[in-house]
Amino acid sequence: MVSGDVLHPRIDISHDLEGEPIVLACFDLGAEQIAAAAHAVAAVAAERFRLAEMSVDDVLELRELTALTDDLNDEDPQPGIRTLVLRPARLSALRDSVARFVETRDEGDWIREDDREPLAHLRGLLAPLEELSAEALRAALSPAPPPVAPHTTGDGPA
Image 1 (tube, rainbow, N blue to C red):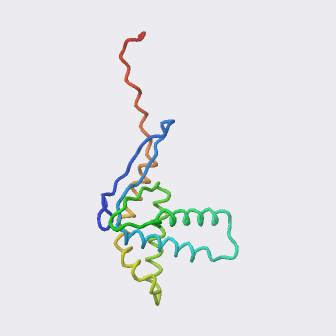
Image 2: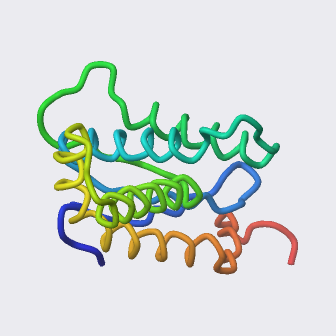
Image 3: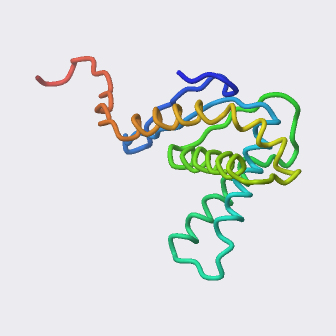
């Protein structure tokens, strides 16, 4: 499983009321890493969607990135570690945003002062997020095992 700045990474698979699998990626991050991730997602969304004209797909992607930023931004941040629980699609959006943020800052001739600290925190998250995202996608795309039938006592007709 992944390591680095991501703590306790795991894939949780449960089932909804119809027995369909629900795949969630769960992992712990420190407050600094979460704040850096929120900064990166917001920055990437702002850079990506500065267009005067957006397609329907662009609007949906912006909506997803905005929701992810809202999830990461805590109204009342507490010091310490927080557990994040994300569906595979949202984890992929986080991974892609972090990767793009790091890539564009590394390739740039200069870096904004506001990006320096988040960039330092995010470099260590790239590989763990990539691995956890791959595991979550594999779990989501794997055939679901049949739901377990309720145990019967055998008192009924055979």
